[in-house]
Every structure is written in structure tokens, then in C-alpha cells.
Image (cartoon, rainbow, N blue to C red; front, side, top):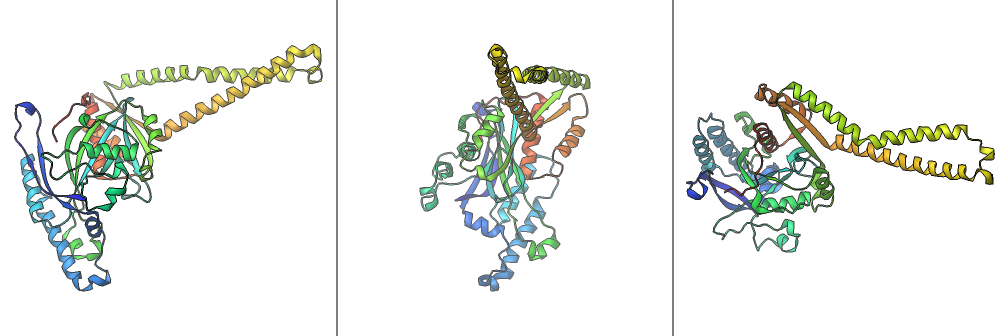
Amino acid sequence: ALLRVLEIKELQSYYGNKNKKPICVTFEKSSFGTVHSLDNNFTAHPLLKNAKDNIIEFFKKDDEAKRNYLLKNYETRQDLIENVNAYLKESTNVNQVGVSGNVQTEDNYFIYGKRADTAIDSNKLYPGVNGNAEVIDKNVKFYQSSMNVDFPSIKTDALRIEFCNELNREAEAELNLHLNENLWNSNGIVLSGFIPTKEQSDDYDTLSYRRMHFNFIFEQKISEKFFKVKKQADNAAEAYENKKLSGLEIEVKKNRFSVLVSSLKNGVNNLMKSKNIITSIFTILLFIGSASNLNLQSLFTLSNLSSIISFLFAGLMVIITVINIAEFIKKSTEKRKYTKKIIFIKNSNLSTQIKKRRGKFLKKQTYHPVFCVCLLTYIERKINGNKINNKKLSN
């Protein structure tokens, strides 16, 4: 049982939340069956042969409302909301509510996933937590026999409906994370979707994926480090939905000199971390040198017992060293494979930097619009030096 948006409005801020802007969304229940049907071109179905023209008109009317209200230039947020509501008033499509969460790890990685080949939006990038908001409905038998992560938290008879528990449900399903619903911060709503031209609307072959997405964006900083989260996610109930889970680290430096200093420090730190590996390599070289000078014929004589013990001990050290080197290489390769870093210079043109680095980061990758917005929100926060306070906001 899914949510279909009917209206969005900003509420009055009272003393207790005077620094926040409450947003109220009016919705009605829809269904996965309805969404799935309208998301796919079903005009060629033999049982709908006589209704084909009506179906095409259904979509053409919705497309016209999109063009009339959603392609305008808005001077204020209120103008935008009014036009979105005007569209919703005329729309007959299943404009759906989704919840999306920016998850920042203890070691300051922004988690994102690449959807699996068999998942919806296959091979597209999505924020770490993402899914449909769902409503408890006793008539849906699937809910009665499914796992807890499939059981919705939204009750239509509740005095007030929050989306935080829906985010927690998705976090557990996709990342195997058990988060506190009171620590999600709200960042607003992202509206995205396909708005066809008039020519495209006249071509019934392009009738797929026409609903608009209303994604409610939240963020939370967690106490786990990235690679621990990644390891936990392998055992998540919906681990199959993500082909790859990655982490992005953003660093903001005062100037280019500070970037150079930071690089030198990182180099020294990495050298210190790998000193055991360097020592181990020298151990192997010494062992090879000693073995080459050893008289193997006299090695196993009783008088040469100390040499035998030394030789065996050295051999054991070599085996341990090889294992350590292999583990070091494995960890280094894994880090490069699953993590990326983007550096920004605070005193340079930030908008140009964001455009350039975002373009480079997303090169040859496809992504859902909500991922791009979540990424930009994260970058903006890092650049401005704002921390996630993990304080409950009204949503």
C-alpha cells in the first residue's frame, strides 16, 4: 500500500519550532499494482484493445498539466509549492512518496549504492537509504507474513504521520543498520520525474515511467565506520538490491598549500602504518641471503642444530610476513575500490569546483536525481563546515 500525493503545504512555525519550517503532505492510499501498471506501457494488452485511446488520453492530460505547471521559473518557494499543487489537482497519475537518507559514517564517509541488475532503476546510483513510503493495510496479505523490514510504520488513523520509522525500516533492510528514529534530520522534498514534450506525448510508445517522485530527504550521522557498515550490509535482508556499496569522503581545504601539507602528512602516516610491511620485506631479503650462504649438506648434522632451529624460525617469519603483505595489499585495494575522496578549495569559486568535481565523480555513471540532490546537500554541508547535529526536526 503506497502513498499518492494530493497536496503539499507549509505550516505555521510556533514558538517550540520557530527556527524550523514544518511541511504537511496530504495523500491517499495507492497500491504497488497500480504503480506498476501505470509505470509500464500496457496499451498493447489484448484485453485493453478498445481502451487504448482512453489510456493515451489519460497520460496526455497528465503530461500537459506537467508542462503547464512544473516547467515554470519560480521566484519564491511559495510560487513553486502553488504550481506543484496546481499540477497535483489536475493530475490523475500515481505520484509517489519515497524516503531517502544521507548516512554519514563515523569516519565521515557519505554512503551510496549502485543498484543491482535485477533491481528497479538497475545500475543507477542512489543514496545509502532509499525506498517507498508504505501504509499499514490489513488487507495486504504480504505484510502479514513478511519480515519486519517489510512491515510499514505509517498508520492512517495516527494523529501525526512521520517518515522517520520508514527510513529506519529501509536502513535495516538495505544496510542492516538499526538507527534511532529521533536522530533523523529533515532536509526537505525533492520532486523529480519525466516531463515529455507534446510530440512525445502523442507517441504512445513513450508512455512508460510517467509518474512524479516526491522524495523526502533526511540525514543522520552514525557511530559505525564505513567498512563495518559495508560488512554488515552483506547480511542485510535486501542486500540483493545493491550491486555495490561505496563511500565518498569530502575534504575542504583553505588553499592549495594546505592540500600539499595534508598530502605530505597522509604520506608519512601511510608510511608509518606500513612500517611493519617494510620490516617484513627486509626479513625476507635477509632470509634469502642467509639461505644462499648456507651449506645444505651440513645443515642436518647434530652439531648444526642451532642452524636448523634458526632456519625453521626464519622460514616461519617469512610465511607470516607473506600473509601480512597479502593482507595489506588486500586492504589497500579494497579501500581504493569502494571509497573515493573529493577535495575542495574553500577560497576558490565553489560553484565551479562543485560542477567540475561532481561531473568528474559521476562521469560514465547513471544516477537517480535524488542521489544528485543528496550528494550536493552533503557537499554543501561539508563546505560550509556545518555538522549533522542528530537533533530531531519536524517533518
